[in-house]
Every structure is written in C-alpha cells, then in structure tokens.
Length: 228
Image (tube, rainbow, N blue to C red):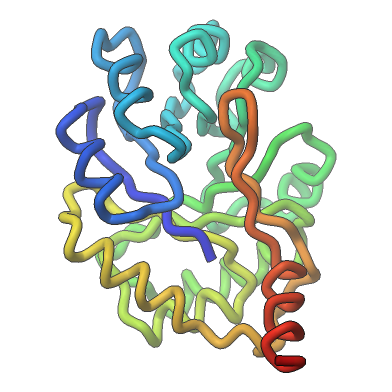
C-alpha cells in the first residue's frame, strides 16, 4: 500500500517535511496552478512524485503541469475531455464513493493511471464508506487510492487493505511524525492475506519515469525470504 501525503498548497518548506517522512508521493489540494513555487517544489521533492488535485478546473492545465515537472494530476468526472488527452502527465480520476454502478464500470475503459475515492462526509471511516470502497474495488480494474478524512488506525488501515485499496491519501496538515507512524503501520500490513481484488500494479507516474509497487513483487520477496 502506498502512502500519499496530502497538502493544502504549494510550499517548498512542506516538501522538506514530506521527504523526511519518506512518503511515496505528495498530492497538492490547491485549486488551480500558476504558483511560482511549483517548479521549485518539484525540485525539492527529488524522486518523490508530485501531483495536483484540480477537480473540474483542468482545462489546459495538464500541459502546464507537465512543463513545470509535476508528475500527475487528479480531476473529477465534471472535467473537460481534454483532461484525458493533454500533456505528458499521469492521470487519476476522483470519484464519489456512491458513484452510479454504470459509470463505475465505464471507468475501466478510460486511459487513466488509477482512481481516487473522495473522502466521506464524516470525519472518520464509516462502515458504509468501507462497503462502498469494496464495491468499487470489485467493479474496477484500476489501482485504487482513498482520500482519508483523518489519520487512520492500524485496524482501519488493515480493513482498507483487505478491501482492495492500493494507497491512501492523508488529509492536509500532517507532520512528519504522523506520516512516519502511518508508514510503519503500512509496512506491518499482512502481505499473505487474501484481498478482494486481483493482482494489480500500483503506479504513481513520474515525469520521465515511474514509481511502481506491485503485489507480485511483494509475493516474490516473500518467496525469496522463505527460500533463505
């Protein structure tokens, strides 16, 4: 499971915190681009992929983000079709947990790198939200990320993992200590447990390369350990 740190705006100082926390990627929830600090932040992130959450405001943005060195963007179903075509950049579609089943099935035909399930209305993970995540996992063949409403517990994280969630996006404002704790919890997830989904690769696009973690790789590592 990947750990994606959510932050509220483009900020080079925050980038340093993310690097120290050893997160797998960073997602900026700032609406719109045009920040003079974006290119500097991309450089500060080093090898850690940086993404922008654009929602509906993605017209003409993909190309601009790619030029800045940004690695991926997140847009929703109300975004113009150009969001699927412009710019050499990774693409994630943000959806509501209760999205119509017909639309969910159609997502598999889109040329995107994955799906981000928006956080629920509650400030915590509800049983209903978990069930909706399981439903999306059963219907989609794309990697699934979940935007958390708050920092999660190890039991909640384990439930999301079993439901087929491939990565979590933390709410903005988390410090390095909290992120490191989450990273530790993720490393303790049971790798041998049977999950609800098939073997999907988790890919967070990087500008000019890619960062990938797959279940197959984890299983190969386990087999090597057993042989030793």
